[in-house]
Image (tube, rainbow over all chains, first blue to last red; front, side, top):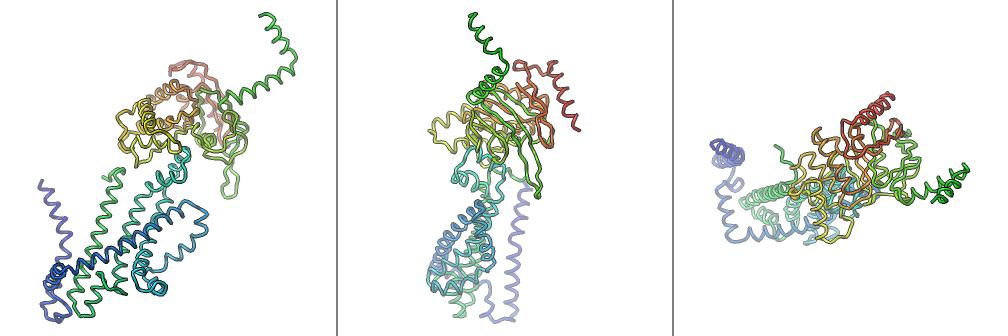
Length: 258
Length: 281
């Protein structure tokens, strides 16, 4: 019983100590008077700004705008990545034709697609979704491809013996066997998408968390920028954690590592 | 009555006619009644451009409902032979005929059981067995019923919802046997199915296999490295020699099933087979 309490205490300490320490250092630097308040806003001020933004609904509106872009872009890019990964993993011919291009393209940092996409699509909603989709595509496709390649040959024999159609093969074997890889791809794709939406909104937008930060920077409202930075981190963390939970949920068939 | 016998006698008298009619009737026999014929089967792998023969000159005829066991040292190509018969490997020389038709790929009429159970770990027992129906249209109620019947046959009633990792090795192998049987194949190929279970479970599962074989009337071809097992179960025991795998000899075991494991004839045959296999080293 005490053991459990001690364990919870240890975990809580491990999780909370670094941010608390950071806040303490931040507070200390503010009090030292080396930086003007306008540049280094004290933690308390940032907290009050956060409450204010929540109360007047601005934060929520921006979050909603960013969130829906992420969802759409992630759905398109992740979906395309999944299909591409499975197709490349299953078809030797396709891999021979596309493998090289695919390898070259994935070396392009996803932010580098920005200028090209702006030229093609302008700076509207389409651009933001395209750049998010692009960021989600590669981690999804690569992890899925890895997963499909790692499906044990032994299981493929079973599928062959029972004369699975291609669709049965994908549905009954390839996808479930690669699920751990696919979920890792999903998690990476989602966190890249989230980073990308903030980036894209800094480029060009009229609403969204990134826009809020960009606009605040121009207005020299460093407290709002800080709220944006912290919020981006927290949302990213929550997305990652919820996908980890899903990963755990979908691997119940695995013997738990003791 | 007398004249019939005479007629038969008369037909048999000239020697060359005799052999001709016999071989003629033999072929007809093999095309209609015989389940499985292997003629001059050979298989080689290419490794670094070098041809590595695995099986050579395999000739074998298996009658329907027979239990044939294949023994040999490891590396004699016994598993490969089963993969050829199952249709998983299509690249070989010679002929493999099932009811007179060439094997060109897998068929639901030929089941295959592996040494490892190969149940999909993300599916429970019931769903694993249902994989066998994946390429067939079948009424869901019938499907459930057939699965239930076969789980009962292998003694796994009550374990429908269990996942493979919750089963012992023997239970998982029994689930795999159920999965291989639900399509009522006429030929069941078993690739060292009891090689990975403990000794007691093995004896138990040997009896189980025999019971299922009797109950289902299915032709069984089982590869094993356990000579006792081969002699306990097989109507015929095919002894393979290795590198490349060739038929050393085929032994007919004329004893009724179920057999006494301590039977003197079995003991004698075991000695002979051991001598055969030891002879190559």
